[in-house]
Amino acid sequence: MLICRDFTLEFQAASKNNVLVKTLTELNAVDLETTERLLGLFNDDHVPYDYQKESSDAPSLANMTKKAIQLLSRSDKGFFLMVEGGKIDHAHHETRVIYIKMPGRDQRSEEHTSELQ
Image 1 (cartoon, rainbow, N blue to C red):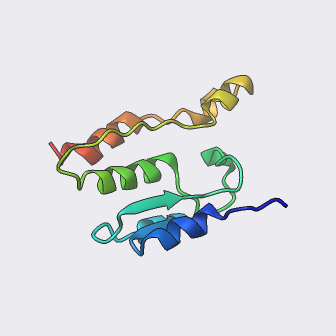
Image 2: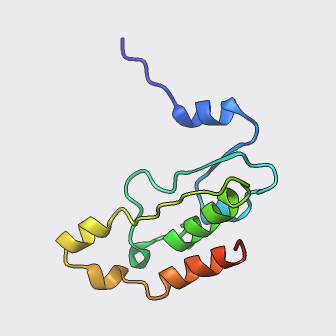
Image 3: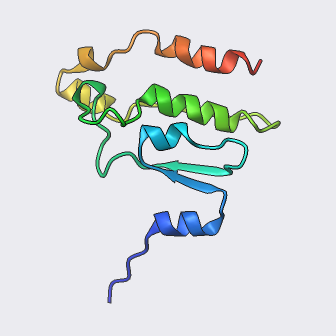
């Protein structure tokens, strides 16, 4: 007998301060004062390239990074955050790199963290 676990239910049941979000609207509505852990599941498969997004309620990598920085920066012990677009390898194989190049991405991350320094 195969027993399947629903980790999203377990995550939410573990603490009332664990928050699961699936849309940009939900991500933007996260209460940073009460959220201890944040889990974003925005697609059943790979998150599509920005130019392929069918829903305007799908967060961009920049949206997700900004929220992560806001949440993690609450710690007085500091934090480490590694951000990588998971489909970058796919883009290279499909020779679509030009579509995912986003000028200013590093600048936006610096803007989000500059107030922390």
